[in-house]
Structures are given as C-alpha cells and as structure tokens.
Image (tube, rainbow, N blue to C red; front, side):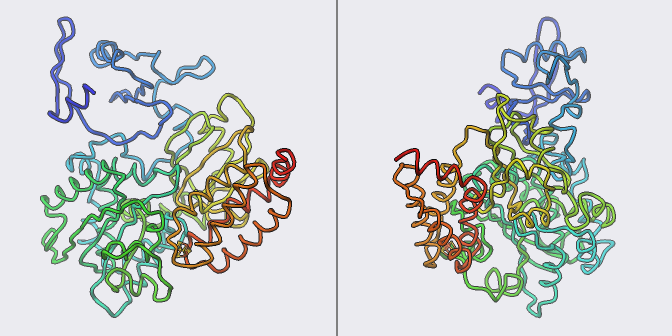
Amino acid sequence: ARLKELTSNMDHVTVKIGEEIAHVGLKMSGCHGFCEMGPLVRIEPYNYLYLKVKLEDCEEIFEKTILHGEPVTRLMYEDNGHVYQTQEEIPFYAKQTRLVLRNCGHIDAEHIEDAMAVGAYESFEKAVFEMTPEAVIKTVTDAGLRGRGGAGFPAGRKWSQVASQPEKIRYVVCNGDEGDPGAFMDRSVMEGDPHRMIEGMMLAAYAVQAQEGYIYVRAEYPLAVRRLQIAIAQAEEKGLLGENILGTGFSFKLHINRGAGAFVCGEGSALTASIEGKRGMPRVKPPRTVEQGLWEKPTVLNNVETYANIPMIIKNGADWYSCIGTPQSPGTKAFALTGNVKNTGLIEVPMGISLREIIFDIGGGIKDDKGFKAVQIGGPSGGCLVESQLDSKMDFDSLSKIGAMIGSGGLVVMDEDTCMVEVARFFMNFTQRESCGKCVPCREGTKRMLEILERIVAGNGEMSDLDELEELADMIENTALCGLGKSAPKPVVSTIHAFRKEYEEHIVDKK
Ligand code: SF4
C-alpha cells in the first residue's frame, strides 16, 4: 500500500538508511510472469530476482543490494540446496523463449520513452520509410505467423485478403477480450508492453492501408485499459498516431472499446457487432470479416499476441522468425500455466515444445508431489490431455491431430485428486452461461448436457446418460452457429473418452 501511494504520486523517492542517502527511481512495470513467487523484485544490473518480497525485506535489499551489489540469498529461488542467483538461471525461465513478453516486467509501461529505448516503433519507422505495404504483408506471410487467438489462421493471408478488397475504407481491430477461465496472456502484454501491440496494429494498418483501428478490451482489465489509454495518448503526442504520421502522408487513428465481459464477444462477428453498439452475437458467414467486418468494411481482426509478434518480424525478417518453433507453426506461444502445478505463471515457449517440458521443467511438476492426472488446454473450447499425451508437441497441427487445440493459451493442470466429472461440469456450466442464445443447438443443447452432468455429480445419473451426452455433443458440434457452441462439448467428450471409468464409478458409487 505504501508503494502504491508513493508511485501514484511521484516517480522517485529519497531514501535514508543510517548515514546512507540514495535517490531511487520508481517504475511501473508489467508482470514478470512468475506469479507463484510474487511479489517479485528484479535488481538491475545484476539480474537478481527476489521472490515473495515483503515490505520488511526492503531495508535489507536496499542496504545489501542497492548500496553494495550483494545478493540477499534468502530471497532467491532455491531448489535442492542450490540457490539461483539470476532470473535467467531459474528453471522457470531457463526453458522459455521470451520474445513477445521480453519487455514485460522490464520497462515502465506508462512511459513511451522507456519502450522506445528498447526499440518500440523502430519497425514501424522501417516499414513506412523502407517498405511497401505489399512487402510488409509478404514478410508476415513468409514468416508463417499464425493467429494466436485460437484458430491459427495465417496472419499474412488474412492481411492480403483485406488488402485485395475493392472497398478502400478498412479497419484494423484487436481482440483483447480474453475470456477463457485461467487465461491472462493478453492482459500481461497490454499491461506490460502496450506499445508493442499498438505498433503491431500500426504495421497491419499500413499493410492494408486502413485508416482506423479499435482495441476491444474487456472492462474487467482496468489496468490494461488505463495503460493502453496512456500509450495511445503518448504515441499521438510523439506524432506516431493520428494524421500524416512522421510526415509520410499515412494516417491512423486508434480507439479503445471496452467490452462488458461476454465470452461470446471473443468471436469475430460478435466482437465487431459489439463495437458497433449492437448486441454481441455471432452472425452467419459469409461474408467473412476480411470482406465485411466492422461497419461492413474489410477488417483485419487479430488478437493481442498476434499483433505483438509483428514488430520483431518486421525488424528481424521472415527467415529469423520462421527458424523459431516448428516449420508449420513458427514462433513462440504464451501460455497461462495454472492449476495444481508448482510454478504457476505466465510463460512463453517455442512452438513444438512438449507438454512434459512445460509442466515438469518450467512448471516444476505437480504441487505437493502428487501424481499428474490431466491438463485442460484451450479453456472451455479445448480438451483434456492425459499422461499418455504428455510428450505431445505444443503446436497447432500436432494438437489438432489428437483432438485438442491451443486455443488462446490457457493450461490448467490437474492432479490425481481432481474429479474429472466436476471439471466437465465446471466448463459446461461456463459455456452454458455464456451461450448467447441465438441458435437452438447451443442454447438448448448445452443446457441439457449441463443437466445430465449435474445429475451424475449428484449421484442420480444412469449409464445411458453417457450415451446421451455423446449424442448431444455430436449434434451441438455439427449444428451450432459459432465456435463457442461448436467447441462447448469438447471438455465433456474428451473427459468421457479418457476417464469413462470415473464417470461410471460416479454413477454406480453414489447410488
Ligand atoms: Fe450463440 Fe451458442 Fe449459437 Fe454461438 S453457438 S451463436 S454462442 S447460441
């Protein structure tokens, strides 16, 4: 509370301890990602990372580290007697490739100068002065970047479809409506490095020659909204947004639109309807968003993480980017690692890494050394992966082959004590509540599935319920209008397949 008071009123403090006096700068950084160990304090230039820091620790940190460069080892990460002195050595970070999250936790997200000191807007400058819009699209296409919002559609192809429309009024929209339970990747980027995402949107706008853009961010992310507002205002002040940017004749205006937290508004057509002031409901396609999106104009719609990848692709080139990850899914992916894992937090890994490496090397294994049971990937639209799938590669195509999906990047780890029927009920309850009600299969089908699951959990289920669940799931998957409905049965189907015995025991045991 004291720090908050200080930082909201000033950007530095004068500290006197004993005879020593020092002026200490205060910076409002974003998240370092190691949530399990927060509050974290990173001391530059030594790269010491102090964990679970309390107010009482500050005096010792100041005396030892700030004044004399000595580490306070009791606050450092320790495993089996080994103390990890720098952040980069800690196993949680050592296996990560932090590209999109590189600046999160390291720069002051509320000062554009801090972002510019580490290269913000250099890629945009390079694009507008040295590249044609077509060359920008070609670079993104050659890099092989696929949308990080879930479907994995190639970003460059989407952009070229917008650029080829005869209609010249075009929009660039950012989906920051991260609604999956347990997901907070986009939030961290918006809070920790908003200029990276804004620059990505500017590059998309230049590539398709769009004049206006909208960031659709959920109102439950007030800090993200505030930092985006500050970032946009500062970019406008520097002449990086608005009319005739950098004297090039190119103009781009950026708006923020706050969503009210409906999960369905993460779907493209519902999102654009919501921006237009209409009820957020998906519509039948075609026309696709690239042809008729926002205000029925051609629209590039990507999510926060996708845009955040763009500046470094333009800076370093397509070849550099396509060498990271796998040939079909280049680059990295940010995941929110939560649940019964020792090291919960926000991670970024190269595509193609195995689930085992994520859970056991980065995540440190299962909490309290219990057995691993399953991991829910992709939130309520994803599915459960079990022990035999721990060596699966985490990329779009490998996961789709085993009936799962990356989704936006939520990973909820479950230990041996987790009841999988309860898990299925939790996700079905979520999607049922979030169904917009437009189409019958989703509106009624999810309700029936939830009723059956509640019956089973209450001990009133019957064996025939399992067949009925699978029949309903099949019907919903094949007939629902949008992705929310189509994927709603996935957690139920995948848990029935992997843990049928558990469902059966529920029915028999509780009678
Ligand atoms: Fe709405 Fe569900 Fe139909 Fe999607 S599938 S349009 S969320 S009712």
